[in-house]
Amino acid sequence: MNYVHLSPYFPPNYLHFTKALKTEGIRVLGLGDMPYDDLHPDLKSALTDYYLVDNLHQYNQLVRAMGYFTHQYGKIDGIDSHNEYWLETEAMLRADFNIVGLKPEDMIHMKKKSEMKKVFRAAGLHVAEGMVVADWESLLQFANKNGYPLIAKPDNGVGASGTYKIFNETDLRSFFDKKPANEYFIEQFIEGIIESFDGLVDLKGDLLFSTSHINERGVMEVVNEDTHVYFYNLREIPQDIEEAGKRALKAFQLKGRFFHIEFFREQQSNKLFALEVNMRPPGGYTMDMFNFSVDADLYQLWASMVSGKEVSFNYERKFHVCFVSRKNRHHYQFKQHELLQKYPQQIAFHGAIPDVMSPAMGNYCFLVRTSDLQEMFEVQKAIHQLK
Image (cartoon, rainbow, N blue to C red; front, side):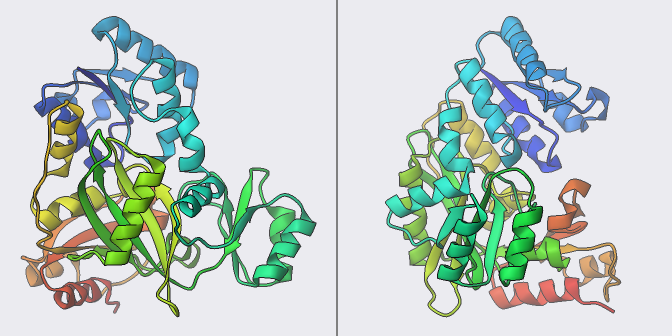
């Protein structure tokens, strides 16, 4: 079996996908623009071959690489990067090389926020009112009908890049006059916190693993206001989150993939509003949070599924795991070594965050693991405590 791992070095922890595939006896073929000599030794040892391109954005170079792999090893059975950024590229390559999985026609409902809302509505889920920005008159009419604040973001975008919070008509006019040429989507602002339904579905679309995370500060606020970041999983998933998440999975007909479905929980009403879907693992070190929370290896579970094995997964959510990050510009009360001495059992992992992710996720992170939620918050506050 031949599996292409696109950009297998990013983020750094995703080399575990390659290692897990190799453990299952799968031939793993790396495709990227990082020189081979710069790859992590563990990644090198897990790859059967590696094709270096000048630029991953040059599709003709990717086609050439896939052609080389096909000539050398036979039919390609799968391709993934597990990154939101490359979903559409992967879909195009699957179509061009007749590979099972998401194709370009699937992308419209999984990448465009305006189209996601249609699927959410069809699934009977609440959504914030929104529209694709077309002209000033219709935009102003939408604002007058729905009120302020409003959120404007690229209809097809990743993270909080290019996102605007609009408080009044002056802001609205400024946004409209200065917005980039790409298509924008505007919607009501929901006052609340982000709760997610995350996990993995098998090749038939049945749920293998699920969890839920709380993020009290959205990515937009973190990036625009340069605030601290922390988010954490729940040991018990709220019933409404689980029901809404399962309905969304069924509506999107997802099979054989990790997923990350975001909801806003409105502060006043406690009502859930479906926000967006990401048909890949939650970013950064969240895969490792999965593993620490249940004392298992979800990288390996995924690889076993990919190999064609009949897989099942019995697990207990034993721990809360909290991602807590720091920013280089701050002076903190406790130095890193002091935290490790103070909380040796609670800090399960710590490490640097790649620069490209630091605006949204900070510069350095700790994964805090506790069975008790209040103990988790105690450690989180200590990590963020400033001098």
